[in-house]
Length: 111
Image (cartoon, rainbow, N blue to C red; front, side):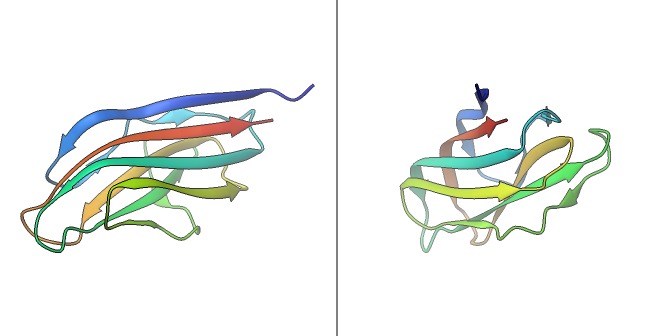
């Protein structure tokens, strides 16, 4: 029987500047799907870029080679990722000035 787990790594936070979620260790998982539920997006031409980052130790980080998730309106977005290694987090970067994102970010992991 396969195992799965969903980790909520950011919940209902009002984000106005770049951020990184708390690191999540998942060496047991072979599959990952990142879900972003953009609850509210405020600002003229508001747009955010969310990038999966990976780490061998939870201290030093680099961007995963997967495409970033582009948030430009409220709703649920998702990206599937394989071959991601040990530690995971999401880095968010606003791509427009004076913007606010309120979201819930999930890591859905499966063995």
